[in-house]
Picture 1 (cartoon, one colour):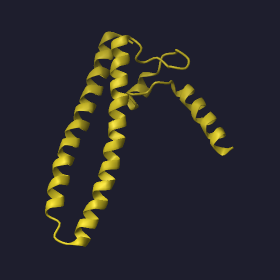
Picture 2 (picture 1 turned 90 degrees about the vertical axis):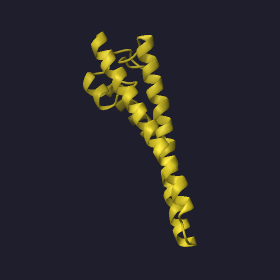
Picture 3 (picture 1 turned 180 degrees about the vertical axis):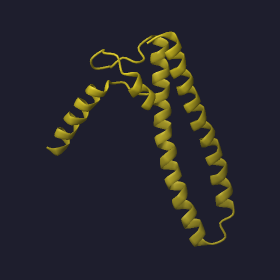
Picture 4 (picture 1 turned 45 degrees about the horizontal axis):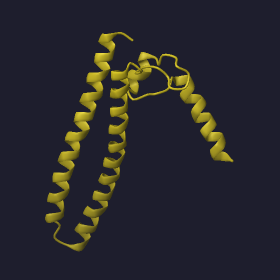
Length: 121
């Protein structure tokens, strides 16, 4: 992968992370406001259910930020775009679709097949 491609993915990952962090800030503000304006128990219960769903989403995004940070670290260390299992290059199409990918498509498919076999036991 050349420097231009690495910079493209670095910017893509940083922009993605910034978007997630910005959404998180908005969510916190909205959750605080919504709780203050719930007039009765049913509205509060509905609001709490919405909050729980939103918090689960935010937790998933927190994990995604960790993956983004890991990808950025791999770019800095010169390891980005290479499969962690085989050492082979990960296709640009795969990285475009999933910039945090750590395995080539073939290695990921093998990994998922093994996981499924063990889960069925």
